[in-house]
Length: 175
Image 1 (tube, rainbow, N blue to C red):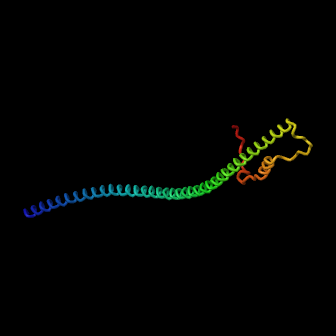
Image 2: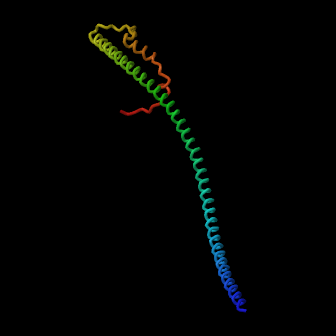
């Protein structure tokens, strides 16, 4: 019987040892479940964060694509405006050249007019002196214009305005 008692004690000790291992296993199983739940939550949070980051990346990509299209359109518009400005600059330069040439013609014409007027003035003074001295007899046939005045009228008749200066309407400036 003693052997049986020893054997029962041994088996009880073995049972206690097995129960300890069973408790440890259950405890480890609970810890593993707890850790799995934590890891699962962290994984779900990471998946959600990755989804949010992907959405943000996609939105930034869409905005970048729109910005690139807008930038290209702006560059095209700028190129078009530069081309138009170049055309306008050429037209303006042509108009300036025409104006410069017209001014030179006007200056020459005014110089010629001034010269003719001086000649005409001298002629009139000469006629006045001749009348005062009684040398000029008026027979009513003295209608010929002096040579200088006739040249002035011919020059005025020959002046043709250029296309640019003829179409321009400038307000009268008071000097």
